[in-house]
Length: 141
Image (cartoon, rainbow, N blue to C red; front, side):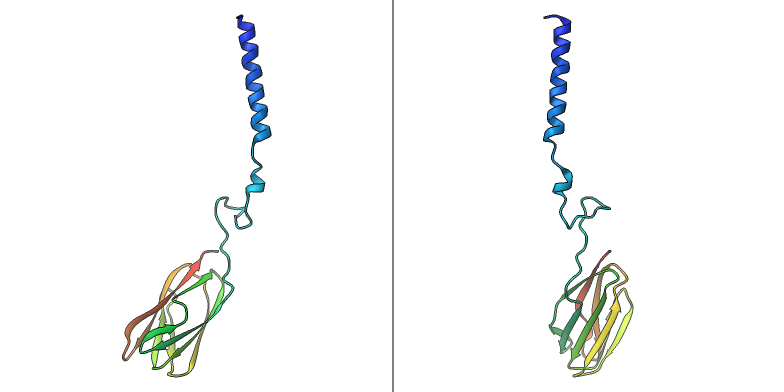
């Protein structure tokens, strides 16, 4: 076989393969899911929790009802109601927020989740010592 025939076959093969690659290449826009960020491909946009109001019931210095983990997105406003059977002080770490709990009353804590991270809240009181009640997880925006 002559050099000219080999070169022609090689060029023709490369051309056919390139055309097939272009034709059969998947459309990357159709693979994009709605939850993916256009700014940072491969990352998911945090979805805001539907609930931003919570109630935690505390008996004997321990959480007896309400979520153990509260989820939020940065800059979201949360309202948490605490119902305690005894007097104490609630402390939200990382935000350095304190709330005096009066027994058998709804004590309301409303704040904007400005810091991303995982923050424990605990009860300081006469009988409770430092009792961890739960955490608030704040996803970055």
